[in-house]
Length: 225
Image (cartoon, rainbow, N blue to C red; front, top):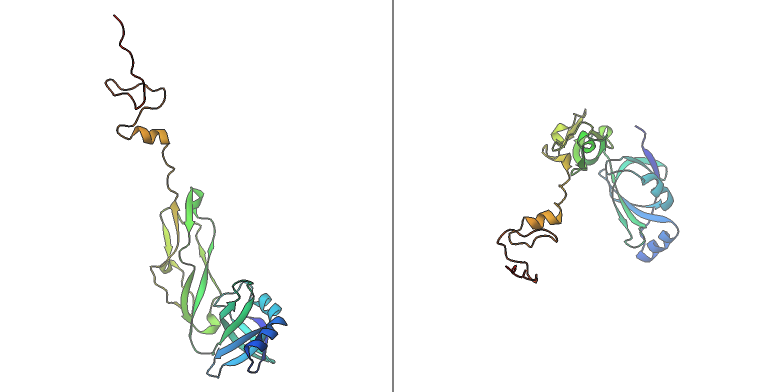
């Protein structure tokens, strides 16, 4: 599989002020960990990183080209400025070939459930699963067909089809998707009021024989004989 390419340059030790200046010129400080080597400090081009990292997940492998030498990595963490949304720092984890790894793989629901067509609501409690595998077999995502999912039914991790060379570590009982019916609408207010003992009759309705008049109602004068 061909992975996305991201360029990086080695950076020297810098102060916070110097890093702030570099960010102003469109550079993002980064650090590469793993691979049995000492952590490496890097600079990325902000525009390129935004383009390359768009739509990827924790399980997406990138080719990180450091001064011309390629390394396969994951983006393990990135920090953003809370106010501007600007990416302030990125941490990479280098992949060691031949060594099994743990990663979280996103789940993508495919299709419109039968239960939704019949008026139900689709819920998606589980958005990802944790897996263990050799890096070369790591899927970027897993598709889950929910077309035949009926109301009051659910799909669990144990229902996922087996993936060759990939071991799923998440609990088999984790719910991925289910369809529920929406709650019935409340009964009309008038009907609800009629069910309450001692409630006054609606306007224009005859009072039950022997019932006391409603509060504030004028008493009817006795008929003259």
